[in-house]
Image (cartoon, rainbow, N blue to C red; front, side, top):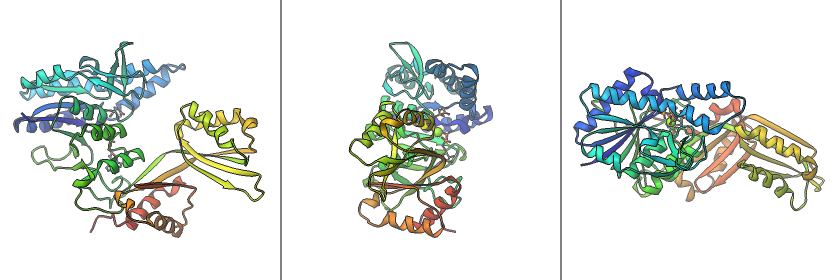
Length: 412
Ligand code: ADP
Ligand code: ASP
Ligand code: MG
């Protein structure tokens, strides 16, 4: 029998009425002769609420208790969907991460899946019982503690589960009907893609398109999971196919640029008048690396006097204060005159496998943004993408400009 994993995100399970709607989608697939495992997120806004409660409750942050608390959102929706499925005459039961078990490492708050024992789930599926799995949560076996997979982690639960139970397909149901050329909430002219390659999806997700968690795309790539993004708001009787994430060879219509992504989760640090001598870059970046702070864009400006230089780089906004502290503590050792920081910056990126074979793609963007009076603070490029750091208030203008420039606007 064909086997399917269906994942429903927060807005799709936001209340009991929406959960009933989810049940209709599940029923359709069961009636079409599929064995179905469903992965659910917490109700929309629930995880944010739980995170806020954690902050309110304890001045001393405890990662393991954080996970015990935030995993509860998915716990509830899994039970509710199982109830609703039974209500419409289907056989179903809920599964918590630890019951499967889905095991992880002990990196509480952003744990990585280490294994999934699909055997008990498969037993149930074979007997016609729908498995309703709480996404986002896992178990660290040695300590016997609940873990969570990082924000957006239910996507990864679904893809990893698909690999573990050898599902024929994994459908990610969300509040948009597929992957778009950019966030359709920001650019109304964004166009839905019928297909997008794993490589491009990975870049889009890493660079800010939160429609899929980055790790879910990595796991799908690694285990060759057939992955679709579709809408739970489609009529359950007439669903649209959505977007298929597939191998590069399976893309028929290739564009130079496939999508534009943006991330507001950036902060910029500039160290002024750093001595221009060997070992300075190491003095700055080694302590940051040792503190697990990921540095993204780096630019070094050679100053006129040739004895000093300015170094600018970006870190995730969440790491900004920690990074500043580390550098301020080492001010004498590094030897800089001033540290400037900015959090009101955004990283805009263009992604496309066509960039491998076309030159001058980024140069066109620099010119287009200059014509709109948008200043570019930093640039990085790699094989299939380039990114630019700009001031936050220009986000929408820059995204729309690039979207039009690369011919991505929907017609009409
Ligand atoms: P869920 O709760 O279902 O997991 P998310 O909010 O995590 O949903 O992801 C869906 C959202 O991703 C959409 O509502 C959309 O605003 C946003 N998004 C950002 N970039 C894109 C893109 N390129 N294509 C589609 N959606 C995108
Ligand atoms: N509920 C979790 C979150 O909001 C996981 C998910 O929805 O994928 O991040
Ligand atoms: Mg999500």
